[in-house]
Image (cartoon, rainbow, N blue to C red):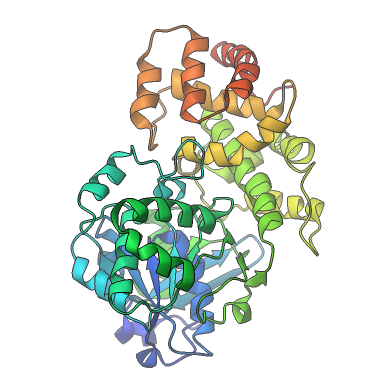
Length: 474
């Protein structure tokens, strides 16, 4: 017999160990607007907000999908209830989350999205749109007005297709409706994420609606935040397993790890949910936390993905179970990524490294190397280039970069990247290896001096890879 679908009517059918919302959901009203209702948001900010709803019921989330209706089709028929399975080899928790109240699809429901931005009850906007969603230029700081999506939005700003265009349009709507204050928080893996978001928005607004800028300066704040939780893409097998654990079918189920961290800069224009009570940390200086996470977790994750794809390993845990690959990752973290980091107050960096190694090795997380490798031209620029710029001579990180170059140039591994066209041109090119490598480094917006220093080392490592020598071998 097929299982019934998760909904308000089937909460009573959940198995006994499943945790349920401990507040009266019918009393919850919207207070947060979130752009990008993917798996990470559901396993991270939505969970923190769900906990905060036990103290105040006016912080429900209205989600907005920027393009696809898929998440709306998963959540809306379930009254936006969904489950989060967090587990490792020592513990397991299964919890139903009720903080999301509605999911809108921006291209299909523009009037409803505009109404949400105008609503003064919405005091906070959060975003998880991936690094590529910020449409930043080669400097990583300003709007790339040459991107086709941005050009289309600038031509028709009332019909935005990008996150930047949608947020700019929403700010215009809010100003026209009376200009209630707003707090906008980026929850993506970018250093100084909300500041970069603000810079891109200011550039966009100056071209389209410059009248919004004085109000934005006075009434809108952009606190940066650092988010940390590993959330793999869900599989059909994972959905089936989670249904059996729940006792009902959940089309929006997410699986993650027990660890979760959220650090938020204390810079708000409005009240915000009591995320501190849910475990978030408010700080005055977020930079050390951002650097720690981007360099130790995100940079290591990208290296694991490249090594894993080359070695035919599907998941992060499989890479960490390979003694040679694990030794490479441990050495990369200890010898190249950790030195030079300033520990945030109260943090032990060597202990954090050991925690990360244990999290990477979690056999319950089926975190695919291919998922981490997506959008690498955006990710590697943020995660690897600052460390490479500080290095002299050959290094483990240069070998990891060679692995990425080799995957693009000389393998049939599928590429999913905002600069897909340029990367495929390199793959199809019959130019000498150094010229092709230079084009790849250009796609990362690598500075000229660093590019010239790296090219001969990358050429040698790629030649070794072509002859069958793995990058993890000393």
